[in-house]
Length: 328
Image 1: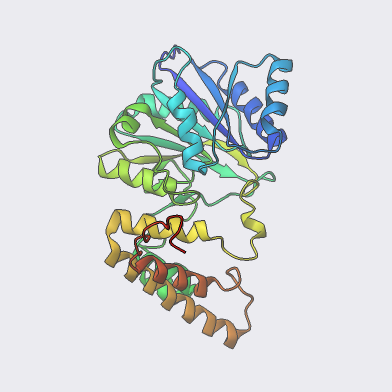
Image 2 (image 1 turned 45 degrees about the vertical axis):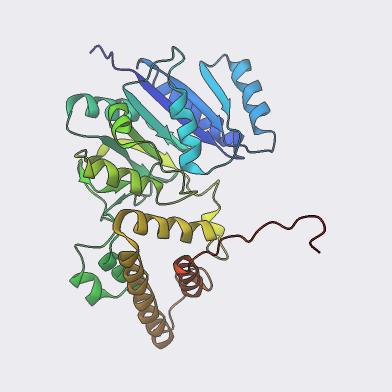
Protein backbone atom coordinates (compact mmCIF):
# COMPACT_ATOMS: atom_id res chain seq x y z
CA UNK A 1 0.00 0.00 0.00
CA UNK A 2 1.45 3.33 -1.09
CA UNK A 3 0.93 6.18 1.36
CA UNK A 4 1.56 9.67 0.01
CA UNK A 5 -0.19 12.03 2.46
CA UNK A 6 2.39 13.78 4.64
CA UNK A 7 2.48 13.50 8.42
CA UNK A 8 4.06 15.86 10.93
CA UNK A 9 4.68 14.24 14.33
CA UNK A 10 5.07 16.63 17.26
CA UNK A 11 6.51 15.61 20.63
CA UNK A 12 6.66 18.14 23.46
CA UNK A 13 9.25 17.98 26.23
CA UNK A 14 9.21 19.66 29.62
CA UNK A 15 11.99 18.56 31.94
CA UNK A 16 11.77 14.85 31.09
CA UNK A 17 14.48 14.52 28.40
CA UNK A 18 15.28 10.82 28.92
CA UNK A 19 11.66 9.78 28.74
CA UNK A 20 10.96 12.14 25.86
CA UNK A 21 13.78 10.58 23.84
CA UNK A 22 12.24 7.15 24.44
CA UNK A 23 8.93 8.45 23.08
CA UNK A 24 10.70 9.97 20.07
CA UNK A 25 12.49 6.70 19.36
CA UNK A 26 9.17 4.83 19.46
CA UNK A 27 7.55 7.41 17.18
CA UNK A 28 10.41 7.23 14.68
CA UNK A 29 10.09 3.46 14.56
CA UNK A 30 6.34 3.62 13.96
CA UNK A 31 6.51 6.38 11.31
CA UNK A 32 9.45 4.94 9.36
CA UNK A 33 7.20 3.94 6.45
CA UNK A 34 5.08 7.09 6.47
CA UNK A 35 6.02 10.19 4.48
CA UNK A 36 6.69 13.04 6.85
CA UNK A 37 8.86 14.42 9.63
CA UNK A 38 9.15 14.59 13.39
CA UNK A 39 9.53 17.81 15.36
CA UNK A 40 10.62 17.79 19.00
CA UNK A 41 9.82 20.94 20.97
CA UNK A 42 11.49 21.77 24.26
CA UNK A 43 8.96 23.84 26.19
CA UNK A 44 11.49 26.21 27.81
CA UNK A 45 12.52 23.54 30.32
CA UNK A 46 15.45 25.55 31.64
CA UNK A 47 17.11 22.42 33.04
CA UNK A 48 19.51 21.46 30.26
CA UNK A 49 16.93 19.31 28.46
CA UNK A 50 17.52 21.01 25.12
CA UNK A 51 21.30 20.42 25.11
CA UNK A 52 20.91 16.82 26.29
CA UNK A 53 18.35 16.00 23.58
CA UNK A 54 20.35 17.83 20.92
CA UNK A 55 23.47 15.78 21.74
CA UNK A 56 21.50 12.51 21.75
CA UNK A 57 19.84 13.27 18.41
CA UNK A 58 23.20 14.10 16.82
CA UNK A 59 24.85 10.99 18.26
CA UNK A 60 22.08 8.72 16.96
CA UNK A 61 21.74 10.53 13.64
CA UNK A 62 17.99 10.76 14.04
CA UNK A 63 15.97 12.69 11.41
CA UNK A 64 14.49 14.97 14.06
CA UNK A 65 14.16 18.76 14.14
CA UNK A 66 14.65 20.08 17.66
CA UNK A 67 13.04 23.44 18.44
CA UNK A 68 13.40 25.53 21.59
CA UNK A 69 10.19 27.29 22.55
CA UNK A 70 11.02 30.78 23.90
CA UNK A 71 8.50 30.36 26.72
CA UNK A 72 6.56 27.68 28.55
CA UNK A 73 3.03 28.59 27.53
CA UNK A 74 1.66 25.19 28.47
CA UNK A 75 0.64 22.06 26.57
CA UNK A 76 -1.33 23.72 23.78
CA UNK A 77 1.12 26.54 23.19
CA UNK A 78 4.06 24.14 23.08
CA UNK A 79 2.37 21.87 20.56
CA UNK A 80 1.40 24.90 18.51
CA UNK A 81 5.10 25.75 18.18
CA UNK A 82 5.68 22.38 16.55
CA UNK A 83 2.56 22.52 14.39
CA UNK A 84 3.42 26.00 13.11
CA UNK A 85 6.92 24.81 12.22
CA UNK A 86 5.35 22.60 9.56
CA UNK A 87 7.53 20.55 7.27
CA UNK A 88 11.14 21.50 6.58
CA UNK A 89 10.14 22.33 2.99
CA UNK A 90 8.00 25.17 4.30
CA UNK A 91 4.81 23.32 3.37
CA UNK A 92 2.03 22.21 5.66
CA UNK A 93 1.50 18.47 6.20
CA UNK A 94 -1.73 16.66 5.49
CA UNK A 95 -1.92 15.35 9.05
CA UNK A 96 -0.49 16.36 12.43
CA UNK A 97 0.15 13.76 15.11
CA UNK A 98 0.80 14.84 18.70
CA UNK A 99 2.38 12.36 21.09
CA UNK A 100 2.98 12.87 24.80
CA UNK A 101 6.55 12.66 26.03
CA UNK A 102 5.54 9.76 28.31
CA UNK A 103 3.62 7.82 25.63
CA UNK A 104 4.99 4.97 23.54
CA UNK A 105 3.12 3.80 20.41
CA UNK A 106 2.78 0.06 19.95
CA UNK A 107 3.29 -1.73 16.62
CA UNK A 108 1.16 -0.14 13.92
CA UNK A 109 -0.43 2.38 16.31
CA UNK A 110 0.40 5.51 14.31
CA UNK A 111 -0.20 3.87 10.93
CA UNK A 112 -3.70 2.84 12.04
CA UNK A 113 -4.59 6.44 12.89
CA UNK A 114 -3.13 7.59 9.56
CA UNK A 115 -5.08 4.97 7.60
CA UNK A 116 -8.25 5.88 9.51
CA UNK A 117 -8.06 9.51 8.41
CA UNK A 118 -7.21 8.43 4.87
CA UNK A 119 -10.20 6.07 4.66
CA UNK A 120 -12.77 8.10 6.59
CA UNK A 121 -12.67 11.54 5.10
CA UNK A 122 -15.55 12.75 7.29
CA UNK A 123 -13.46 12.33 10.47
CA UNK A 124 -11.43 15.29 11.73
CA UNK A 125 -9.37 13.74 14.52
CA UNK A 126 -8.43 10.18 15.45
CA UNK A 127 -6.91 8.97 18.72
CA UNK A 128 -5.61 5.82 20.30
CA UNK A 129 -6.54 3.31 22.97
CA UNK A 130 -4.28 4.22 25.88
CA UNK A 131 -3.04 1.78 28.48
CA UNK A 132 -0.54 1.85 31.31
CA UNK A 133 2.91 0.24 31.27
CA UNK A 134 1.44 -2.96 32.72
CA UNK A 135 -1.45 -3.04 30.25
CA UNK A 136 -4.06 -1.47 32.53
CA UNK A 137 -6.55 0.54 30.42
CA UNK A 138 -6.65 4.31 30.85
CA UNK A 139 -9.89 6.25 30.49
CA UNK A 140 -9.15 8.76 27.72
CA UNK A 141 -12.47 8.95 25.83
CA UNK A 142 -15.03 11.43 27.07
CA UNK A 143 -18.27 13.33 26.61
CA UNK A 144 -18.15 17.10 26.56
CA UNK A 145 -18.50 18.65 30.05
CA UNK A 146 -21.94 19.98 30.96
CA UNK A 147 -23.92 21.18 33.96
CA UNK A 148 -25.41 17.71 34.42
CA UNK A 149 -22.01 16.13 33.98
CA UNK A 150 -20.54 18.37 36.68
CA UNK A 151 -23.23 17.26 39.14
CA UNK A 152 -22.84 13.58 38.29
CA UNK A 153 -19.07 13.61 38.51
CA UNK A 154 -18.90 15.47 41.80
CA UNK A 155 -21.70 13.58 43.58
CA UNK A 156 -20.28 10.10 42.96
CA UNK A 157 -23.66 8.62 43.89
CA UNK A 158 -25.22 5.64 42.10
CA UNK A 159 -28.83 6.91 41.79
CA UNK A 160 -27.63 10.30 40.46
CA UNK A 161 -25.20 8.60 38.07
CA UNK A 162 -27.94 6.34 36.72
CA UNK A 163 -30.27 9.30 36.25
CA UNK A 164 -27.58 11.35 34.47
CA UNK A 165 -25.76 8.51 32.73
CA UNK A 166 -26.02 10.30 29.38
CA UNK A 167 -24.08 13.25 30.79
CA UNK A 168 -21.30 11.36 32.55
CA UNK A 169 -18.05 12.80 31.19
CA UNK A 170 -15.73 9.73 31.28
CA UNK A 171 -16.99 7.07 28.90
CA UNK A 172 -16.92 3.40 29.77
CA UNK A 173 -13.96 1.95 27.91
CA UNK A 174 -15.10 1.50 24.27
CA UNK A 175 -14.50 -2.04 23.11
CA UNK A 176 -14.54 -1.13 19.43
CA UNK A 177 -13.64 1.83 17.25
CA UNK A 178 -16.29 4.54 17.57
CA UNK A 179 -16.97 8.26 17.50
CA UNK A 180 -16.61 10.10 20.81
CA UNK A 181 -16.90 13.73 21.89
CA UNK A 182 -13.23 14.21 22.76
CA UNK A 183 -10.04 12.34 23.48
CA UNK A 184 -7.03 13.04 25.67
CA UNK A 185 -4.11 14.36 23.64
CA UNK A 186 -1.57 11.67 24.56
CA UNK A 187 -1.84 10.20 21.04
CA UNK A 188 -4.01 12.21 18.67
CA UNK A 189 -3.87 12.69 14.90
CA UNK A 190 -5.55 15.68 13.26
CA UNK A 191 -6.24 16.85 9.75
CA UNK A 192 -4.23 19.95 8.98
CA UNK A 193 -7.15 21.22 6.90
CA UNK A 194 -9.37 21.06 9.98
CA UNK A 195 -6.80 22.98 12.03
CA UNK A 196 -6.64 25.56 9.24
CA UNK A 197 -10.41 25.91 9.49
CA UNK A 198 -10.88 26.04 13.27
CA UNK A 199 -7.48 27.22 14.49
CA UNK A 200 -4.84 25.57 16.65
CA UNK A 201 -4.92 24.98 20.40
CA UNK A 202 -6.30 27.92 22.36
CA UNK A 203 -3.24 29.15 24.25
CA UNK A 204 -5.36 30.67 27.01
CA UNK A 205 -5.41 27.14 28.42
CA UNK A 206 -2.11 26.49 30.16
CA UNK A 207 -2.93 22.87 30.93
CA UNK A 208 -6.15 20.81 30.87
CA UNK A 209 -9.30 21.35 28.77
CA UNK A 210 -7.31 22.37 25.67
CA UNK A 211 -8.05 19.08 23.87
CA UNK A 212 -11.69 19.30 24.99
CA UNK A 213 -12.00 22.77 23.50
CA UNK A 214 -10.24 21.78 20.25
CA UNK A 215 -12.45 18.73 19.73
CA UNK A 216 -15.55 20.80 20.50
CA UNK A 217 -14.58 23.40 17.91
CA UNK A 218 -13.98 20.63 15.39
CA UNK A 219 -17.34 19.01 16.17
CA UNK A 220 -19.17 22.32 15.79
CA UNK A 221 -17.49 22.74 12.41
CA UNK A 222 -18.74 19.30 11.34
CA UNK A 223 -15.62 17.25 12.09
CA UNK A 224 -16.13 14.42 14.63
CA UNK A 225 -13.42 12.67 16.64
CA UNK A 226 -12.82 8.93 16.34
CA UNK A 227 -11.50 6.60 19.02
CA UNK A 228 -9.49 3.87 17.28
CA UNK A 229 -9.40 0.78 19.49
CA UNK A 230 -6.83 -0.92 17.24
CA UNK A 231 -4.24 1.82 17.79
CA UNK A 232 -2.59 1.00 21.12
CA UNK A 233 -0.25 3.31 23.01
CA UNK A 234 1.39 2.78 26.42
CA UNK A 235 1.24 5.85 28.64
CA UNK A 236 2.78 6.47 32.03
CA UNK A 237 0.73 9.62 32.70
CA UNK A 238 1.19 12.88 34.65
CA UNK A 239 4.99 12.77 34.55
CA UNK A 240 5.47 16.41 33.58
CA UNK A 241 2.42 17.76 35.43
CA UNK A 242 2.82 15.83 38.69
CA UNK A 243 -0.97 15.44 38.88
CA UNK A 244 -0.76 12.18 40.82
CA UNK A 245 1.21 13.98 43.53
CA UNK A 246 -1.00 17.08 43.85
CA UNK A 247 -1.46 18.13 47.47
CA UNK A 248 -3.73 20.89 46.20
CA UNK A 249 -5.28 21.57 42.81
CA UNK A 250 -3.21 24.24 41.01
CA UNK A 251 -4.80 27.49 39.94
CA UNK A 252 -4.29 26.82 36.25
CA UNK A 253 -6.72 23.86 36.43
CA UNK A 254 -9.49 26.12 37.75
CA UNK A 255 -8.59 28.80 35.19
CA UNK A 256 -8.77 26.30 32.32
CA UNK A 257 -12.08 24.91 33.51
CA UNK A 258 -13.63 28.38 33.85
CA UNK A 259 -12.31 29.47 30.46
CA UNK A 260 -13.71 26.35 28.79
CA UNK A 261 -17.23 26.93 30.11
CA UNK A 262 -17.35 30.70 29.61
CA UNK A 263 -15.80 30.56 26.15
CA UNK A 264 -18.01 27.79 24.81
CA UNK A 265 -21.28 28.27 26.74
CA UNK A 266 -21.25 31.73 28.34
CA UNK A 267 -20.80 33.07 31.85
CA UNK A 268 -24.27 32.12 33.11
CA UNK A 269 -23.72 28.51 32.05
CA UNK A 270 -20.33 28.48 33.77
CA UNK A 271 -21.93 29.73 37.00
CA UNK A 272 -24.56 26.98 36.92
CA UNK A 273 -21.89 24.39 36.12
CA UNK A 274 -19.90 25.46 39.16
CA UNK A 275 -23.06 25.46 41.28
CA UNK A 276 -23.82 21.92 40.13
CA UNK A 277 -20.30 20.81 40.99
CA UNK A 278 -20.46 22.40 44.44
CA UNK A 279 -23.83 20.78 45.12
CA UNK A 280 -22.59 17.37 44.02
CA UNK A 281 -19.40 17.82 46.01
CA UNK A 282 -21.28 18.67 49.18
CA UNK A 283 -23.51 15.60 48.75
CA UNK A 284 -20.42 13.45 48.33
CA UNK A 285 -18.76 14.91 51.41
CA UNK A 286 -21.88 14.33 53.52
CA UNK A 287 -21.93 10.69 52.41
CA UNK A 288 -18.21 10.40 53.12
CA UNK A 289 -18.77 11.41 56.72
CA UNK A 290 -21.68 9.00 57.19
CA UNK A 291 -20.01 6.06 55.46
CA UNK A 292 -16.44 6.93 56.53
CA UNK A 293 -15.11 6.91 53.00
CA UNK A 294 -11.66 8.24 52.04
CA UNK A 295 -11.22 11.61 50.32
CA UNK A 296 -11.45 11.59 46.52
CA UNK A 297 -10.34 15.17 45.78
CA UNK A 298 -7.20 17.12 46.70
CA UNK A 299 -7.52 19.06 49.99
CA UNK A 300 -9.72 22.19 49.92
CA UNK A 301 -10.90 21.45 46.36
CA UNK A 302 -14.47 22.77 46.72
CA UNK A 303 -13.30 25.84 48.61
CA UNK A 304 -10.68 26.59 45.96
CA UNK A 305 -13.19 26.04 43.14
CA UNK A 306 -15.74 28.40 44.67
CA UNK A 307 -13.12 31.05 45.51
CA UNK A 308 -11.59 30.97 42.02
CA UNK A 309 -14.89 31.27 40.18
CA UNK A 310 -16.14 34.03 42.48
CA UNK A 311 -12.99 36.00 41.75
CA UNK A 312 -13.45 35.35 38.04
CA UNK A 313 -16.92 36.91 38.23
CA UNK A 314 -15.72 40.09 39.90
CA UNK A 315 -15.10 43.02 37.57
CA UNK A 316 -11.44 43.77 37.26
CA UNK A 317 -10.48 47.29 38.22
CA UNK A 318 -8.52 49.23 35.66
CA UNK A 319 -5.04 50.18 36.87
CA UNK A 320 -4.74 53.74 38.14
CA UNK A 321 -2.48 56.35 36.57
CA UNK A 322 1.21 55.72 36.98
CA UNK A 323 2.94 57.84 39.60
CA UNK A 324 5.34 60.43 38.32
CA UNK A 325 8.53 61.58 39.99
CA UNK A 326 7.60 64.22 42.52
CA UNK A 327 4.04 62.94 43.13
CA UNK A 328 5.02 61.42 46.47
